[in-house]
Amino acid sequence: MLTEPRSGRLAAWGNALLAGLVSPDDAALAIVGDDTVHRVAGLPGEPAPVGLTLALGRLRALGTTGLRVALPAPGHPLGLSGPPEFNARALEAEEAVVCFGAAFGLVPDLYEAGPAGDVHAEVVWHVLPVREAPPADVPSLGEAERELAEALRDATAVLARLDVAASGPVAEAAIDAYRARTERGGEVLAPGYPPRAVRVLELAQRVAFLISLAEDNGHGAAVTAAEISARTEALRPVERTARRAQVAAYNSIVEERERGVR
Image (cartoon, rainbow, N blue to C red):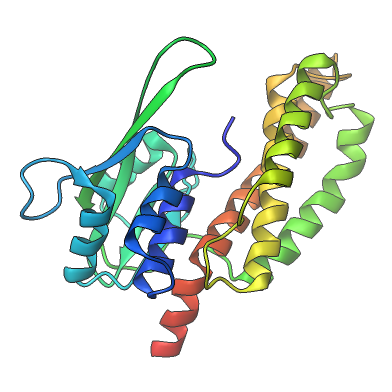
């Protein structure tokens, strides 16, 4: 299970590259992560998919000065600005990257092959036209941090009573694997991001991981229909708030730059 959206890696390290803080090769390596390869299709002037380094350079030449993340869900077009065709593709993928300074967006298609335990993932980012408008429902970093703390506080009593914290060997193994990844692993955000963005993203990713774990491991002690409904209602706003916080963290550099321009 991914705790970091691929759109987050692309936007964060793409922003660091656009700011001159990392080399093209280092940015591409960080964006690909554990995947096999990433390519970009649909770039103006390119009849076939190209590699990340060429694609990021071409987007900069086309006017891109920053990259934003969108993490939409049904009924919640978080980070999107249209048109409908792009929004629909982004909603299907549950993520996208939107260029700042140029009217383009990128939506990933994931291709996986290989047996369990040795799966190879290839990603093709499709470049599509977007509407140049403010992204939907993206809070500031300060707002996101406050909302996340409030949502966690409000939901804790309900979640504890219904025992939604996953238990058992499968859940414990997933938690141990998550801890191992976070302990061994690298930067939460690319160079150039403020410490507050790192703090918000770390908390939002932990919350998103625990919610997904609870959803993947049954209903806990919620055995009646009313309890299951209460559990779902308790999780839904926390999940929504965690997504908003992730988007706010990834987009913080671009939002600060945009406010400075104004």
